[in-house]
Image (cartoon, rainbow, N blue to C red; front, side, top):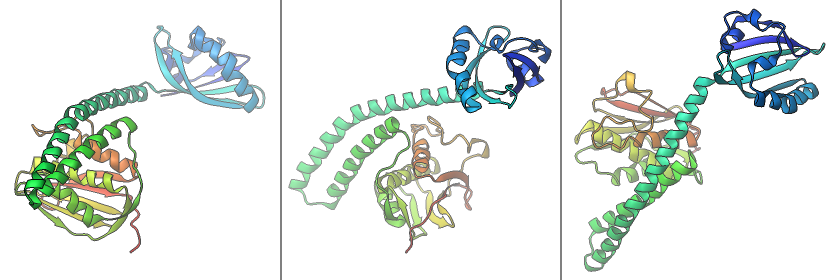
Length: 315
């Protein structure tokens, strides 16, 4: 909601209804003839006098945030834009940003919970995984089997993922070195490191793209794990490309349209064994690459995740 007033020598000469609504007054005439200080507490008034007004007079405009005080004494965060006219009057536009601040606080709380979760996971899992890796090293000395080698690679990858997840929670959406990556190679690597049961994979692209290879692999691992968890043991997964990106599609039950906007939120999961972090991690990796992700319905009626906004490397 916006409000607007014209100020001469620190008193209102005009205020519109939106401004009155912002501050809890029935009619804008309540402001006319009164000082702008009626809208702020003492500390904000002092800040305006010492910081805001000098900048406004020197530069002719000021924009920032403030805490307004309503008629009933309650406060609200606001975005404020001040402009000075040639004759010394001040035009003010006020926007109530309560909802935006609440969303920011909610996101901050979610990030705190995610960081706490990943710290616990890192501490509790790294020890057992390191022991398992050591045991596999001993087993390989006694038995030369490709299965042991693959198991060792999976354990090492799990250790790396624990650290990646912890780093993602602490650092937010970030990527490391970006290189030209063959999409099919990363897809196959990701598929080999998860429990796929009877699921099948079809790769329909040989494109290259600039990406953080480790993060891209993590993206596919989470999308594949999501498909297997929700699509069942015999789910079919396809990875292909289109004009500005790639997609991962399956023939599982799909995602209802009403749920598609929230599937990337922290904690969202419909599977009993799901942590609710997989697709959130996917969205963070996508954002870190400056890509975009949407979920739709696949040709087979399952879920289709489309990652777009990618500039493919030249062949």
